[in-house]
Amino acid sequence: MFTQFGRPLPVMRGCPTAGPAGGRRRGCRAEGASVRTTEIPELPLPEDATLTIPQRIAQGVRALVDSGALSPGDPVPATRPWAQRLGVSRSSVVAAYDQLAAEGYLAARRGSATRVNPRLALLHPRNRTGTSRPGTRAEALHPTAPHPAATAPHPGASVRGASPAAATPAAGPRARPPRPGETPRRHAGASQTDRAPGAPTPIDLLPDRPATDALRTPAWRRAWREAADAVPRPLPPAGAPALRREITEHLRHMRGLVRTPDDLLVTAGAREGLALLLRTLQADAPRGGRALRVGVEAPGYPSLRRVATALGATLVPLAADASGLVTDRLPDAAPDVVIVTPSHQYPLGGSLPIDRRRQLLGWAAAHRVVVVEDDYDSELRYVGQPLPALAALDDPVNGVVVTLGTFSKTVAPEVGVGFVIAPDGLRARMLQLREVLGCPVSGVVQTAFTGYLRSGELRRHTARMRRRYRQRRDRVLAVLGPVPGVEVLPMDGGLHAVVRVPGDVDEGALQDACAAAGLRTAPLSRYWRGAAPRPRPMAGLVIGYAHLEDRTLDEGLARLRQVLRSVSPRARR
Image (cartoon, rainbow, N blue to C red; front, side):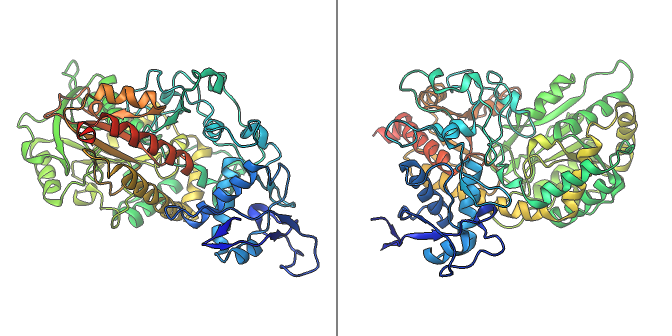
């Protein structure tokens, strides 16, 4: 007999007229009233203290489905009476239903009960024993993930606004998780039969993608619906005034940065904003002058480095440590531009201390250097409040800081909305170039995002995701932290983790072991590539943990723990 918190569970009854997410429709009475009910077998709640109550409920429902106790098309109980029987809050049951709907186990349709997905066999095929094949769920949610032994992209190719196609070039566009009742589109390369016999199901631990399943809220749908109904109108090159106004309000609340709508330009993300800036600075140079020299953190994020080199700039490596850019070693032969990640250094995770920030700004003012603040995930901070932006210390009129902002981490890279804030003179020159090139963000997207920001839902969504990501970060620390010889660098925020191994571990062998275990990870050494050699041996991995559903993440971490134990010399002693 299954138990809940150590005691037997009774047979539970549910309202057959439950609405979406298990809520009762009008006229459905509480337990004990004379209405038709649906009996289901006892719920197997796993006695796992590492799981939250919603996770345990969801896992128990999966077990009922996998065992055949619940079949496709069967209604599930309404959330309120079920929560009463379990002795938990209704929100816990609702959260479990939402997770199961995102995974394709449940299907909700307005005006009818929430049911086990009638197309469940297409999403989660069964073997002859009636249990789900290992890995089937992950393949259904990510049907285009290639085999990990395939050539992996450069780290960062799948993140920070990069297109899913760039992240998995061999597989084509990455599919979103299926909506309830929907059959996911399959890719020919995603079938289990394409893997070698006995090969593990691929799990993509590449950084640094956010979870996007929680976006489907009423505020999100309403914003896009209203944008689709709006009459298209010409937009100024800087972007819709209403959107710029909402972004400045958002920055005031979330980042402590006070600017006016005229201080910023709407962009298609951080890379597009950087390209606009560099093209402007290059156009300002004398005809036939030298290429721009762009200082970059080493280690640092590869994506913006590639933008600079693609536009003909010369990279100048600048040392970074666990606290960010090392400002007392800035060169006298200063570059034209310096790109920094002061709020959350990528990938090491440090935050630039206030004394280094002031030293950087003083050096930049003295040498007429433009400081580009890449503010990519500063709002996803788990310890304390988000730090003030570097631009908050700068003069908005005659200053040196240009802030690149993006919503790819808090919302989704696919939305393609960001902004750039620059001092007055530089912004005016950037606007002149934008008038020639045009704004790359469509009016529909700008209108929808304006409504989403105005509703306040983005702040609420960010708070929810911070809680979810913090829980997943804690899982990473709990599983990988105790491995002998392995160091998981402190993670005060963000969507990735850096796992360091002893310097005598061969990083290539580590990557090979991960591929053999079906894991896609990014080697730590690549974050120096294109900038400078490593100042000292530092081997390891950079992994993402935000975008995977909980069971897939747990499986991936368990495999990675075994890999680290097998390759670490200290672990073998």
